[in-house]
Image (cartoon, rainbow, N blue to C red; front, side):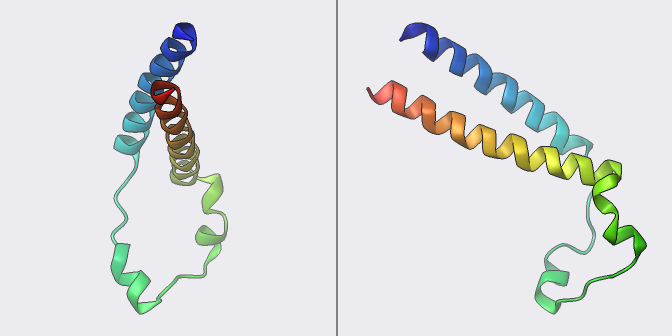
Amino acid sequence: MQVVKMILVVLEFIICLALSIIVLFQSREDAGLSSTITGSTTNNFFEKNKSRTKEGRLKKWTIILGIIFVVNSIALSIIYIA
């Protein structure tokens, strides 16, 4: 059981480091919360193909690493409780 704990702790450290680096590489979105409240969106070619850009890939990897981080944290808490 100690080996599993160590593997998960090392994996947690790597995920945290990767997530921090990816978040730092992302550009700031100026629209933010104001566009959510007003409902304004732009429907142009760039918005439709945003997932193919660098920003789109960074956003996708941020979401993926965030989900992996949460799952790994839950697994760590279950193992340390048991």
